[in-house]
Image (cartoon, rainbow, N blue to C red):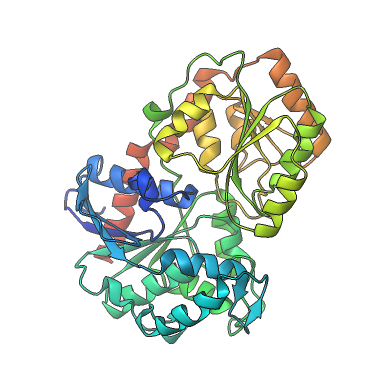
Length: 413
């Protein structure tokens, strides 16, 4: 048994997560970022570990500790420009302009000049200099991506272990060639995927499907640890009669799939839909705005600390996410914890069906619209005791203890 009484120093790296910590610092935050921050707080308060949460921002942040979690913010003044540039230009496997904007005329030369100060390519097995001076016992990274590959490489260079937390079923999409430079739809190459999944000291899976897929694809035994949620933060109340159908996601056509949500909204013309949607694909955004039904309200961004109120005001939560790309969506947990009935095109590790938190249409869009209309008209609420029991493995206290014990086992070898 690991010595869980010993205090470890865990360094959690989530470069884009600062808006989950300090909502006024940005307008984009997703499940990876909010989940990483929830885990950091849980480890500090419930597993009594020393935790450093590492992220970045375009300017220096004076705060060095929040909720007793050490905050390390790396300054990346070109962060926003690089993200905007990446929406218009692909650099691998070769330079390709996806869409032209006048901003490219100054972004090209400025980003070229800053190239010497960028983090090294993980495929060259070079450690990340931004992490060189952080003295931790174990590193943690989130999702199979270039950032995680770089963290795994850094950990190996420092002779320290690393934990990789899977964030999506797409993290385990099979690759044809490990030496391929062609990125997948998330911009991740096969080499970066291989670094993450074969060189991390331990892999944390969100679902039983991920456990099976990791074993079949890489011959590795993953550890099942659920996403953390503070149930008291999302505690529900009686649903308002003048609420709305809530949808949360981003502009894409393969993962969150907002165009399918619009199809459902058109089939329920008398119901109000409230869509909180982050920027991703300019092409999909254009399609959404061009075909927006009159009963749908688009909201660009809602700070994470206001989301419990948004869920409490909703009468239903609609998910059009693809189970092929999702892991276990935090928004499904948040809806269940707030007592908001769920209608989903697909289920996630059988949670919706087994918990009684809502209804699944098995990919059938018209059936999903019928379920939305029926649930709205009937006002049926999930059984609180059944849902609460299903949420027990996701409690922040439980998850934090499981992660602390896994980290100790990995550190002690």
